[in-house]
Length: 254
Image (tube, helix red, strand yellow):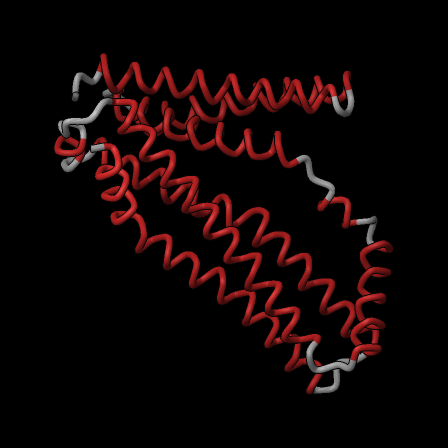
């Protein structure tokens, strides 16, 4: 039954995920086309390098921020619709456990965000490849050397790519579950549900970020990263079981 629930959850969200993939993916291809058009219209040398540098920064913003945040919030809102609105009664009375209900939403959200992010990364890679294809090999190499110099001169923006993937992925999962917990709390209270749900998310996120910053400054790498990973793991597990308790016991919908 869990597999059927997972399929139903995916069918309900695939239209939104497909739309996000199309919009964000199309932005990368469009940007590559605009860069090529600029060169056709006489933008060369340092101006072209600056244009590519801007393109790279836009790609970092789209791939690293928007492609994560936008689908996450939209899919968590779908979680609210499918559990705490009129159709939530039907979903929460299916012959499945509360754990299966929650895990299906978490899995679909993670898969959706991953698909959007991969699409964004692939589209921007295709866009820059399409742009560079108009140069010969030496010209493309020279242009990318200028871009590297521009990045270095701008304060070594490239350090953004020196990312600690394991704590980042754990933090991403914890953030999804914390958002779902905030939605669950908001659906449970009678007065000011949005305010109270937002307070749960913002205050918890603030405290955890402050603690992680302090630990990272005191311990450094790699001990600090290990501690931060552990903190976010505990946050994810704790938020999950609190959410499970609210839905299974206090809302009494199963």
